[in-house]
Length: 416
Image (cartoon, rainbow, N blue to C red):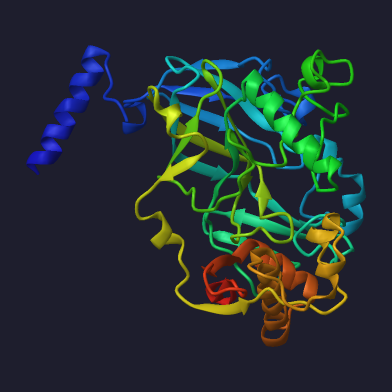
């Protein structure tokens, strides 16, 4: 009764004085800097780019400690939706990969410093997708036809009409997050990738078609022949696709330009370690981070590193099934990742020495067989499931010649 009287008196006083008590929504303790998206696609958006170069200007400034909110697009900058089919993948333009939101000039940070980026929150879009794209993915030689799974996403999980009986838990992270390279890095990275391509390895050179910003990286851009693709991760971060970078972790990035040029994109609703089909559950999202400057630490931290706490426990499966892979193959077979070596000696062997990639392919192949056999999915569905919910892990790298890679599948995805 006493509390009711006090509440009534306070309300009456507010009316008499013309003031109102604040709702908790109005109580703020930190500043927000929003890097908004606009338009249907990256080409329509002044806050979006899809190549790396030191000349790309910042679109907004932020101070360390401010919450920076990135409104991001899906990895393909696509028009895909819940009714999309495999036939729609023919219209996907891979020159548009990946649309990044930013870059952000962080005040007080310079070349040689480290930018600590703590992930505060990810608000997922309601739709995501996972694809098999011909010519792409870890088993691209075995899965040669296009395939799509459309996901209905929320913080409670992701389900799909194309994957009945499966629910993927929400374990979102930034597939791509990084900083701009400086001029020395652009030259160095371009040279080493050009050398690899010249030797027959897989490396994607500059591609001005579809590049954004067009005046810097497009066909008539000032640096069209030096803008780096966003597909491979490098020392500046970028497309790392590391699912352990969960909410609450802090990513440490060396800065190569003043202001660092922070960007975010390619957010994943969930992913298995390996992202084996070539895609995770891809989506747009609203990402909130907070930054801290660590002066001079770029001399020691020359590539991305991560600090974390309980996050790995939170994403660990309660139940699992595990396959074990060794570096074994059929005589006469040349694994696709080794074709550029052009080795007759390699071709005739059935056992490769200390080869983690071949061991990983075998662990994945055995897991696909298990899912098909025990859970009734098609091989394409099983490949997709492994890409979003199964983890490739290194077992040992000492027992020569057979290093071990395992694949761990979270069996909780089959729970009703």
